[in-house]
Image (cartoon, rainbow, N blue to C red):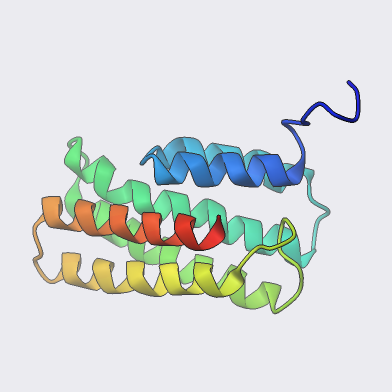
Length: 148
């Protein structure tokens, strides 16, 4: 490989690939792309914890999709709530230290998680699944727009 060829495996490329997949609504694939990035980062570093929060963001977005495809809605709601809590913890634990790539916006991720927490609460209080799916997609789009 020459210096002028892109490196599809660089942290920045893996991060961007995950963003593109999230933006397209391919939540599980975004999860997988960011998990690949997570495996390359040193253990016990802020970037690894922030990347774990990204992985969980994608999994959070996937829960309503799983419910729509026939999985138990109550179980998906419960799983979404647990993922939101752990994602927020991972993000808090990463502090203001550098994320997985230069320009990573931890505030945009915190905002997305807060928005998804509100959506989750509405879902648990009876908002229709189709509306929840639309709102999750909007939250994912807002996050990807802030990161690009």
